[in-house]
Length: 106
Image (cartoon, rainbow, N blue to C red):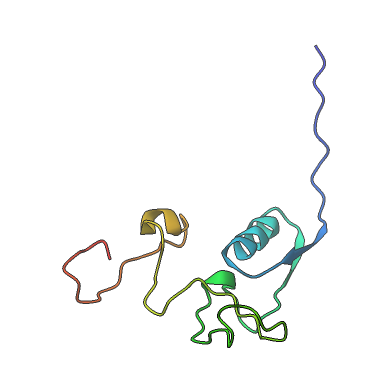
């Protein structure tokens, strides 16, 4: 029986598009594998769809073709839309904060 060895890993230059939760994790894991990673983000901060903005579209019906389109499904008090145990990462957990709630899960 003949065993074929895999070729040794080599480093690649990798572009990650988007610095949201998935992009940041992808970049981290690629770096751990020894690749050179550059993350490109269109906004001025990381977080992707989890970046809150108070701005809303000027035409909520969407009839004005020249309106500024603002995408956000967040509201000011939203912290997670899943159980926090699912939302966090094993090495960076989504920890509860002391918000005065009697529910220790919040």
